[in-house]
Image (cartoon, rainbow, N blue to C red; front, side, top):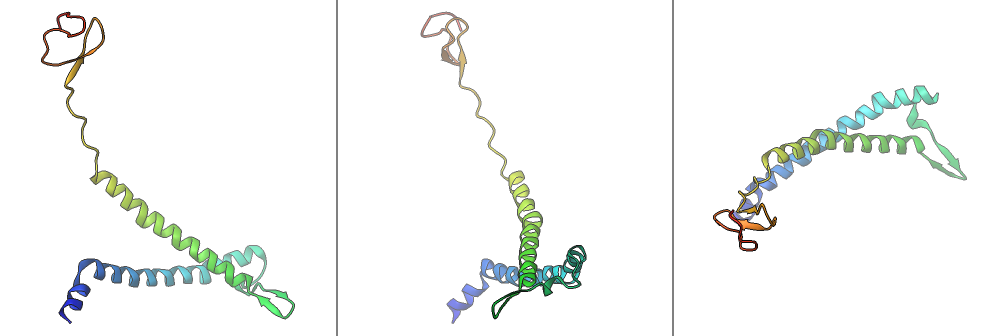
Length: 132
């Protein structure tokens, strides 16, 4: 039992549980936004009083196109919100924190005569023997 308790109390398990709960609540908020605000607005444009009431009768089967459209809009809004409010700020933060290492100091210089690389401490070029 103590091993299970240690597993549950690790930081990443608790963080994941909090994320799932917040994600579920956020999904409910977005679903309500789509159902209560966006659907009537879209229905106003389309001309039907309830967008989710759009149905297609194929034989004896009814296809709930409006409900499916609500689900698609809800998914797109959740994905956009996660991208713009979580992923982009996190990427920006990580880019600021993980700055590239500065370039190392040069250890060679170019010879003025033959343009070959010679060590900084050299007094003469080993290829053309000119003073460095």
